[in-house]
Amino acid sequence: MPSPEYLSAVLKVCHERISSFKDIYRRAHYFFQDPNPFDTDIAPFIHKSLLQGSTLKDGGYKVKQIVGEILRISKEKFDVLQEWSSEELSKTIEEIGSETNQRPDVVMRLLRYAITGVTSGVGVPKVMEILGKEKVKERLRRCILYVDSTTGKEYYHKNIIN
Image 1 (tube, rainbow, N blue to C red):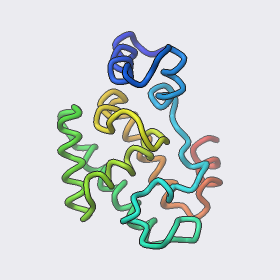
Image 2 (cartoon, helix red, strand yellow; image 1 turned 90 degrees about the vertical axis):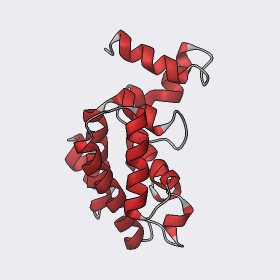
Image 3 (cartoon, rainbow, N blue to C red; image 1 turned 30 degrees about the vertical axis):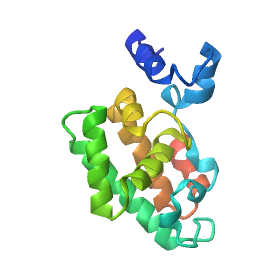
Image 4 (cartoon, rainbow, N blue to C red; image 1 turned 180 degrees about the vertical axis):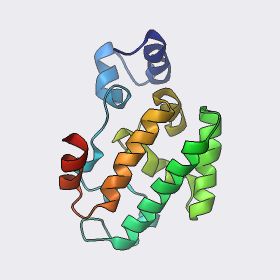
């Protein structure tokens, strides 16, 4: 059961997107359960500038390399981040963009999908702040395992769920 402080933080960032308590889970389920973004191809959720005419389903090796690099660098940077606040997370995401030669919005879009399993919603740094460092690191770890695997969904179900 989430703490009252956690629920309060979720309500605070979601209040403009909900009209009833039922909407909280429907629109922000990722605050309460780990997403499984691996049931679908991740490529449609990656910014067009990364795709360059390829998709992961087509064996887009270069796309998988870029996505894997962004996720690994993100996890490394978040591992050593001392202050876990949306402000520091925003700065770190900008650094990740610079280091990977990607615009920060490209990095944010990929992180949003890796961490929440959705393509829109509450700002990524705020979601990360509320979820907490350990939860974000675990979700990134799972996504990295998926991107690095050759069998995708089957790998996830074999190694993460079981």
